[in-house]
Image 1: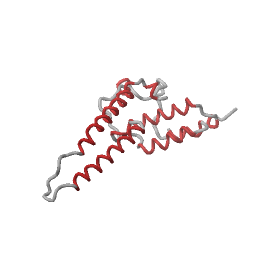
Image 2: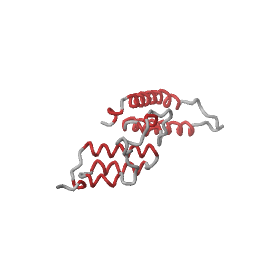
Image 3: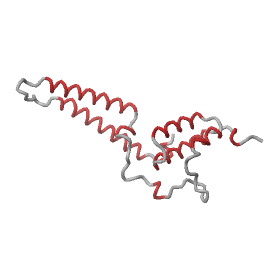
Image 4: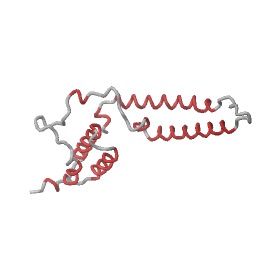
Length: 159
């Protein structure tokens, strides 16, 4: 008979552990660094013995119903989502575009401040022409991506 700890883990087993870790992160039981480290370990786990320590210090599922310890109210979407930062939930492409935009606007503002006349008067705020239109487009794209991601059913997000 094969020991349960030595049995090979399936993709479904790994995903179940990652979902428990995500729940612990949302509950504040794990920091983002702990979550990322444990999630990486879960996806690299080969056996159930590799997966077991990842959730050993987290509350177990409710034994009465076999499911997680979440009520129907706890699974409802939150009215306010607290994230590490605004860009945290965006795809990498948008993060790069936001960073590029911020660098370009910062350089333009510095140049604008340096080209003031000797009396200390600032010229017309021309950096707004760089920041405004492109920032508005990026903000609209980021909002659209965020709304799209939030509107998908949970099963589609896990893939």
